Image (cartoon, rainbow, N blue to C red; front, side, top):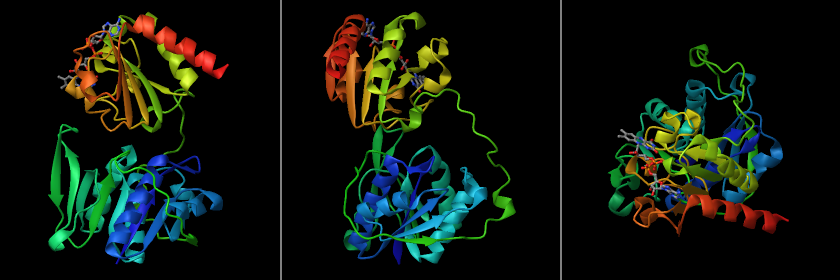
Length: 323
Ligand code: FAD
C-alpha cells in the first residue's frame, strides 16, 4: 500500500498546484504510515523532478514517451493507473485542475476506485472510516463524503491545502508503461496560443472587471493594472456576453474556474454564479462603489469607491513602487 500523486507540468515546469498536491499527498502518506511516489508525464528535466523531494516525494516515476509530450486525457489516465498498479498504491492524488477534472474520474474507473473531486481537507480516518470534506454545488456548500472502496482517488482543489516543504531525497525512476493505440484516438498535433498573455486558468494573479466598467472602451486601465502586476485579465459573464471582452475571459459557474493567489474584482457585484468560479482564490480584493455589494462578504480586502478613481490611483502607486 502506498500513495501516488500526479503532478501536472507545462513546458517542462511543474505547476504550483502540483506542488500543493504533493504536499497534500505526503500528509496522507504520513498519516497512513506509507511512502509517497510522484508520477510525472512529459519532458521534465532531472532538476525539476528532484525538486519534488522537497515536498515529500521519495520516488518519482518519470514517463517521457513522445506520444505523451502533449496532454491526452485517456492515455494519461491509463499511465497514472499503471503507475498506481506498479507502486501498489491504493490512494491516488491529483489536482482538481482543468486537466485533473477530466483525469480523476477516468483513473477511478480504471482502478475501480471511489472518487472525491474538489477535496479541501485531509481525510479523517477515525474508527476505520475514510471521510473527506469537499465542495459541493459549485462551491456553495460542503459535503463530507465517505469512501468505502479499497482504492481511492482524491482530486484536491487548488489553494485548499497550500504548498508545504518536507524535504526527502527523491529517487527518479524511468517508467515506460505500454500506451495503447485505443488511448491515442484524440491527440494534440499543434498548440497555437490565442495570445501571449498569461493563461487565465493557471494565473497566480488575476485582475477581473464587470459591468461596473460601463463599456469596453474603459478596459485600458484594467489591462494596464494587469500588466503592471503580471496578472491575467478576466471578466464577469454579462461583460463577455456583451462582447466587451472575449469569452475566454469569462469566469464563474458557466465560465472558467480560477484559483489564483490574488483575485482583484473591479465593478463586479459578486453574484453567486460568479463566486462559484473564483471562491478558491487565496486572497480576494474587491473594488466596488456600492458598500452593500455581495462580493464584499467574501473579500479579504475591500475598497468602497469608484473604479474610475481607485484603479488609476492603484496604477500610479504601482508605477511609483516599481520606479
Ligand atoms: P452587475 O450585477 O451589473 O454589477 C455591477 C457592479 O458594479 C455593481 O455591484 C455596482 O455597484 C458596481 N459598479 C457600478 N459602477 C461602478 C464604479 N464606477 N466603480 C465601482 N463599482 C461600480 N455571471 C458570471 O460572472 N459568471 C458566470 O459564470 C455566470 N453564470 C451564470 C449562470 C446562470 C445560470 C445565471 C442565471 C447567471 C449567471 N451569471 C454568471 C450572471 C450573474 O448572475 C450576474 O448577473 C453577473 O455575474 C453580474 O455581472 P456584474 O457583476 O459584472 O454586473
